[in-house]
Image (tube, rainbow, N blue to C red; front, side):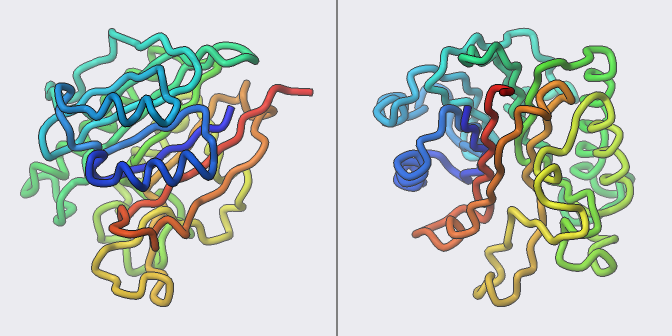
Length: 266
């Protein structure tokens, strides 16, 4: 199974980029975040024309939105919580009926958290921390097996997940309150699949701000997009790549796709 996760930053605007991605990589499953389209206006025909017959999505106008696009049969989960009491379309889950066996798939878009890392003065940051805490509690009581969790988690947890650990410690996405909470979430039963292939001592980014006119030259990136798997799937991890070149596509997202190949154990 070839799996892609990507914050596409508007599905309808970037349908040509999704077509470019799927034509070149032939993924079995694509998980999108920030689709920014209501369910009624979801581009069903265009997505199905790319070969994705099995779909599960939740969307809203102009903000958020998540979607699972699959060539493999899906059984959508219908009992996922309403996180933080908000119907803001940040999570979908499904069972993927893969040839090597069923896999549970979670696609998350964690709140960005605004600019000020103070929950007392910034409701967006308070929302972010509470969201991660609530999700962590849920997975603590619903232990995952044969599960893949992907998405824009909007937190770069490790020192080399950001261009400057020292300078970003007080910047939202890399502050200790966020990174500690994300680590606790991961410890509910997941392995960082991207770092399975790239050592924690190496720089690894998936996002570069639009403010950087020459993003390659400045390379002030952060790893905000993640792929986690439960330990029972680690032996099936075959390869991983971050499609940095997608940052140079026409009208790009500020995030790039992450590709994970999961193969049956020999």
